[in-house]
Image (cartoon, rainbow, N blue to C red; front, side):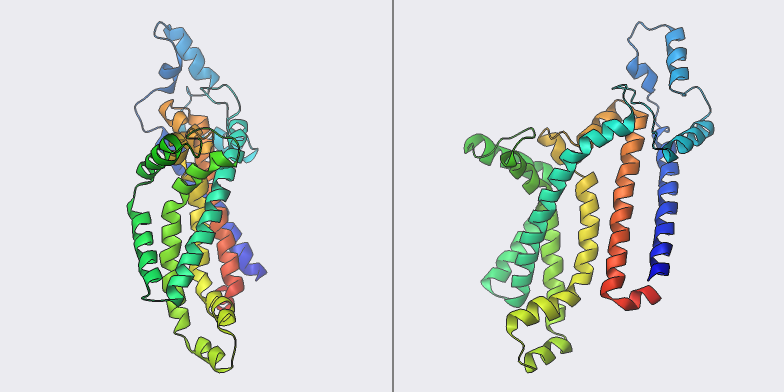
Length: 306
């Protein structure tokens, strides 16, 4: 098991290095000049040269990448062009808001998605199952920006049940969490239903019934444990998505998280912040996959020997 974990950690580190290389060069492919964005229209050429030198943009791109890699290892991603603060400090200041939103969304995804999926599988072809399939189909078909706007209009503006923007108490969290989790609830509902149906048809479940094990124990212990492997994989990927892919939701609801910060940084060509965000997003995805791989091997020991 230790050898399996070590191998996965080495692969994760190599993946992050490759991603940092790609991100750095892709950011510099555009024609927009960040220095021109920062300078006023009447700036002199000498001012532009001074700013280029200050941020190290006057050096060849390969040299800039080596400086970036050397600094990134020490946790230094440079200073934000727009805010004139360390990019990592700026990013970390926004993480709690995004983490709060992501945890609320993953809670809704787990509770609602798994409940509807498991009950639909147990009561297959019933009225509840038909409702569950329609619910999952609608959740994956409706764009998140449209759903967010509709929730704002209905529950925020017309019924005045929840605030429509900003971060505050639990009531501020409801609408953005519902918007962010809708697609994931639908995905987990469909996956848990199909996995549970396969598990309920298996021989070990029939054997458990034959031995007189109570029905609820058969479903939650025997069937769900074996059906949980693909669900666990999906949940790990979804957590990474919730952390890093909340750009649309955070923009709609003016939520002060990393997704909104990254969007502002892209428009301002703020290279240090975009690079810090991209590496942070990659780190979250790679770590989530690493944890899922380890749990995967723990649940099914055959995997670690493959």
